[in-house]
Image (spheres, rainbow, N blue to C red):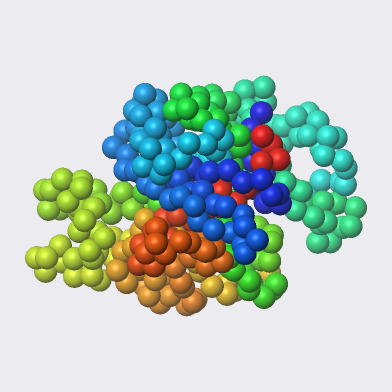
Length: 355
């Protein structure tokens, strides 16, 4: 059984391994008397086709990449915490009458058809997090349920085991973002913050207020769509197109604004999620967007989002309250990797209560 609970406190730390479709990252933190310190960070690129839509297509290649990541990071530990993406995880927020966790688990199994869109609950791993009391009825509690097929969770655990480690917890990437947010930011309790992570093939949105997740959404599009569009237009390799995307210019009249135009379909879907949030949460207006993921490196993207959504936008810094050895990591390097390290930091912050 794997745990999806991403918001639980604890003191025992493990390395967080964020497995994306075109890059995997490792983050290890150390808890000291002066606070958390970054011990290790490394990332390794992944070739296309190893993971597609959150599913492992080439297990041997992934195992090799994870081993390479451990070597690059100098990580010799046994236990890691990783996450599944919104491609393969179903999350649902629901109200239940107040009950103990054991009773709630049995109730969800018995009534699975109402809460989980799977044919047979026996083929599924699920977990839940009790958020607190319902807003209108003190006899109810609000619960987030997360579920994925066992064949998917087992495939990730097996790949990590073959690489020489053990996945003690499987989290959800959008909840890992929230864990990193809560460690590093201290906005007013009424502020509504949108955590937007634009990855290579998926965009995660988690709108939070204080320590509560108000809305999670996954958009099945990301930076790779931009890269492929540039690749087709210029007749170049994927790697060359990726460089153009991150430089913001093709060098032949393609302006920074034009590169940003490729983001319009993603921005439209993000806007629809924000509109849905506003219409279902009492017309609530977002206070700020914290942007993470590989696309956060596209020149001008934060200003473009600010103009489009009429909201303050800043790059997510998961090292805001985490120290690092400046003899090991330069400040410029930390600034560069911060947006892509957010999920990994959230995983590394997880406790080992489910080990």
